Image (cartoon, rainbow, N blue to C red; front, side, top):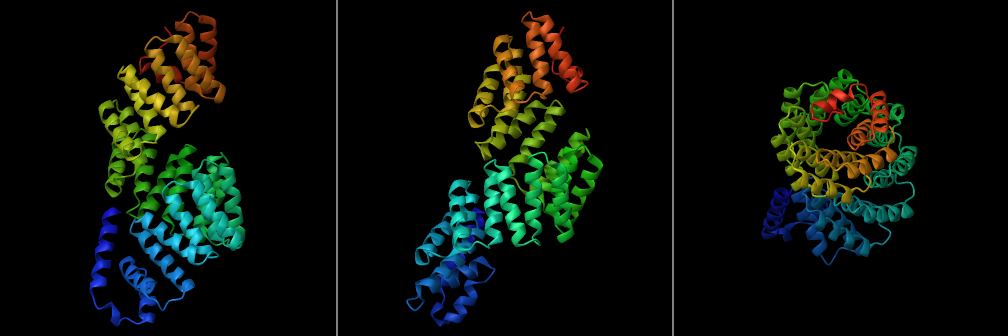
Length: 410
């Protein structure tokens, strides 16, 4: 992205060095609206600098140039141009909407929502603004609110496959798998060549344990778009769930070669290395994920777990604490930290974390099992056995699963 931005800037200055004065206003408008960012930046800049362009038209030129900057990864430059656009035309709904998209790209979701609110206030029938506001709410962890926005967008424009995909993701996030499947299938009906729709339906099948169906969808997504890094990573995850670890690693490697900044790729490949007992490789992947996104609670939690397996107690606790600072009361991290304390024979602390996890998620089998272990090891045999039995009902085979990590009740 940064390299593309520099290239666009170089081309822009070269354009200024050429005899731009020979261009007519019509020529500049044609260039400004070009899909090629460098051409668009040159044409829009000429219009912005012209004293003959009216303020409302200059606002359009700023908007178009912002779109070109955004395409080249110059998001802050895009926001600055959109600021000028709405200063020149305070009722420019599309500029507010696109500035919201730029803020969302910077993870500034509250500021994005403010702009989407303004765009919708000006233009209540803008389906894309509702869609974009839904995406921002989803990123804020509010899937139900996102669904309401997607519903409004679909009511205004029922032909946009992308909205159905995103609503399907929100339905999936709220455990409404049947509604999610309906949305993915509607998206595929509207756009049979949507790699994203197949990829996301594959994720649903994978989550439900329907791995063969998931693989078919991932294969189709990759066939439609061989540059789709997410589809390779997701297929790798499904292969991990099928215990086909070598195939999984090939898919992760392909996905990360396509997008070396894809944090989830490193997280999932790290988890596959854990399954293989290759803990040093797993930590290297989690290190890379954290370097790319130091706010990833999942990355810190995953590294905490592996460091616990390596008996690196202090380092593991530091990682779990960082994860919980980023995502307080996270069940998975409370579970991980409980096992760190358990391995360190700090049974009261382990019991505290496992109880907190079970209170938040009563069906969390691993936390119930850890609680049983901690109780038994601290002398509460009857209470421990009751929790171990409850865990076995929730997840048959859990004792063998944890025995491979060295956790046994006897």
